[in-house]
Image (tube, rainbow, N blue to C red; front, side, top):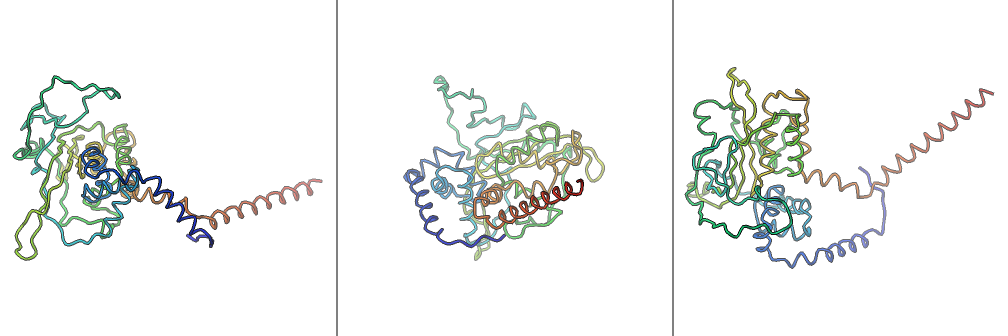
Length: 358
């Protein structure tokens, strides 16, 4: 795209940045730890969409953008692109998660019980203080609270449809794939996608344009250890811990590759406490890789890989949408001149037709 050559804009841009700095100056005074502890869901949202696990940097990004969450994710993603990569961590298993919260709507009784944890799902959403002072909170530690997925017994009985495993997971930050897209790449795109976009597409499937009314088989929030092979000793060492959300949703019955009818499932995983996003992700995953029996058939947006791979990233959407604020003089003037010429030609044509009629 060509931009019209102009002069004198540098000073205006500098002043604009100064004005923005003044506008957001109060945000810079906020304490990082207060943001991390007090706006924990905002921190987790930015980490997930920014695709970088750092609560401190997420807090800085929120301050830098004065609470514009999408812009904050942009700041964090941009910073991520400047970070050096020293290696790849060991594969993690969500069944090894030290649980803070774990529920299943598919089963009443599950191993370890329903662990509600911290949630306001059961609160009346009114801006009044409805806290129950009579509740006695139990002391709780997730140290030894490691429980397998509620769907494990079904898997052990070979009742759940499995998809073919990839020999090596794709890395979309190094090489973006062409169609047909590996499932690992699709899951990565969704994991760092914009929460609202995932919710919209997931909701479409619930409205009939995808899988019919899925059920949450296992939703868990907790801590996972990140391990790395030491470059010198070659031993596996723990390099850190992350908080994450993982969801397995259950859909309809489908035939597997061998023709056996089994339950279908979808998977969602993202940084931090991001239940709605992880649920939406699992529903989309379920819709993409399984036949549906609802409105729309095969030509549904939620089951279109091109739509999912290229339209859920909030940073790309943000950049493309906001770039229209930049100079587009040449493109507009071109369209305008074409319109004027066409208008003139149309008027001349009408005049000629009137002359011939006389």
